[in-house]
Length: 117
Length: 107
Image (cartoon, rainbow over all chains, first blue to last red; front, side):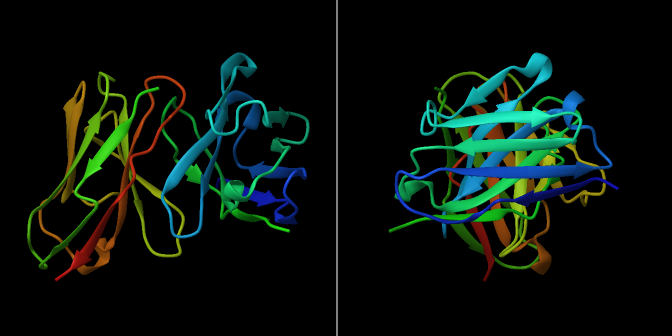
C-alpha cells in the first residue's frame, strides 16, 4: 500500500523559512513523479512544484526563487525548502505523486503552514 | 503560462440529474488533462486522466471528454455522494495548473 506522510508544517513569521518532508512507503520517490500541491484556507488547489525524471525540477511562478524541491533517495523522502515566506503562502501543503507523468494517484494528508506575525 | 478556466464555479442539481462541468485551456494541451474530486475536508482523488480515461475504481457514471482546449466532466446520474468540488488539471508541461474548481451540491 502506498503511503505519503508529510511533516514539518507549523507557524512561521513572514520572511522566515521552513522545510517540509514527505516520507513515502510502498512507493519509490526516486523513480516517480513527485509534486507539492497547496490549498489556501477555503480556496482551490494550486500546483507548487514538481521533480521528475533526471531530477528535473519545476516551480509555479508564485514560488520560483523562494522554494526548492528535492528528494533523498536513501530515505525515500521528498522535501520542499521554503524561504522568504509570505502570508499568501499560508496553506495546507500536500505531497502528491504518480507512476505516470501527469497523474496524481497518491496524496498525503497534508501539512498546514501558517505564515503570520 | 497556460490558464485553466472551469465553468460553472458552482452548481446545484437534483439526484439523478446529468451534470456537466467544463474546463477550457488558454492554449492547446492535447489530451493532457486530469479531473479530481475533493470532498469537504478530504484529500483530492483522481477521477479521470488523459481527458477520458476513468481511473480504476471510479464509478462509471463519471466520464470525461475533449481535447486541445475544451474539456468536459460529466456525471450521468448525480448521486448524494458526488457532492464535492471538482478540479481539472493540465499536465502537458509544467506548471501543472489546476482550474479554479466547481462546487457541486444537491438541490
